[in-house]
Image (cartoon, rainbow, N blue to C red; front, side):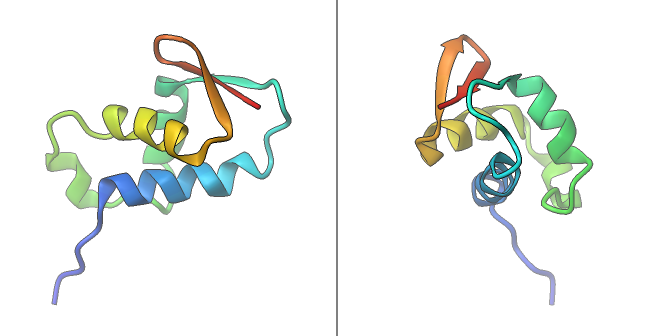
Length: 79
C-alpha cells in the first residue's frame, strides 16, 4: 500500500524541526528553504507532481508556526 503525504504538513514539520537550530533574527528566503526541504527526509517523491509545490507550502508553513515574520515578499525572519 502506498503511503499518502501532505505537502503542507511535511513543510510545516520541516520548518519546526529546522527552526530549533536557527537563532532569532536569522533571515531566509522561501527559495533557500525550498532548496533545503527538497534535499531533506521530509520531501517525498510524490511532491514532484504538484504544480506550485513546495514554494506555496513553504510560505504557509512559515506563517503557521507563528515564529517567523515576513520582512519582504518571499523573505522571512525568525522572531
